[in-house]
Amino acid sequence: MTGANGYVGRHVVASLVSRGQNVVVATRSKMSRDDGVEIFDGDVLIPNLNIFEETGRPDILIHLAWEDGFVHASPKHLDNLPAHVIFLKNMLAGGLRHVVGAGTSHEIGFHVGPITEHTPTFPQNAYGIAKNHLRLVQELLCREHCAVSQWVRCFYIVGDDINNNSIFKKLLLAEAEGRAEFPLNSGELLYDFVDVAELGEMIADVAGQDQIAGTINCCSGEPVTLKTMVLRFIEKNNLKIKPIWGAFPMRTYDSRAIWGDATKIRAIQAVKG
Image (cartoon, rainbow, N blue to C red; front, side, top):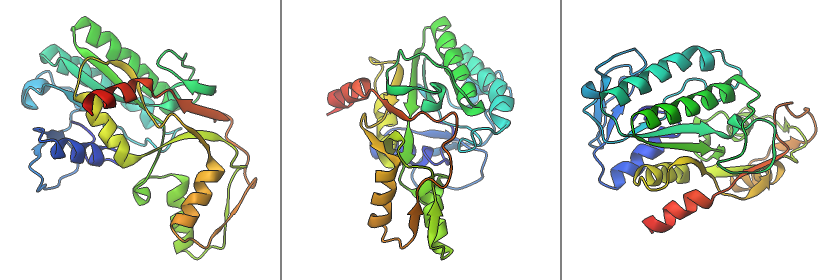
């Protein structure tokens, strides 16, 4: 598994370990672990024809590694994309037969309504463009190598907020700084919010089976306004800060109402249960 030390990855590892899975993680940050997880000490994004052998010939690759996921315009998205493609090519050429890649609702672009696995993609920022490209490459390479391809499309992730870069982390920091007010957009956007710990369970559920494949929305399936979530967060955390609605315009690439069709993830969870 790559990206094991990331915001989402930590929760996926915890879920896999709790299920008794033999987990090998690839991480560029040096650290010791006490959870029985094996560490591959190397950078998987450095081209290596023998990477499959050197990572222990894994049965399944969960590929979560990604830089600047919270910075949608970062040049690293497109700059690093070729390295991700080469990594997948070398893993599959070596013998890998099951890939779980991590996607984002930003692959879709401007859209109103539910997203299914068949919703056309028109990404509007570098993050969405790079992820959408990698999704298509993964699907192509897996077909060529007769491997299972699963693409877990993540939506608006919340929870463990101090470790993300969301509005909710910014609210916590603003409160800690003693600020009385917090400027926001109108708050009327409808999003699909999913707790990061639950998302970790979902990704582990997806990887634990191979009957349901393709693009799988890891989501709640329920649209909720940003305003509702912010007010709930302030109340839950007993924050004194006051949101100022309408202080900022909405970003041009943000959909006004977007949520995931949870049919496939619920089917996977039903079989598990």
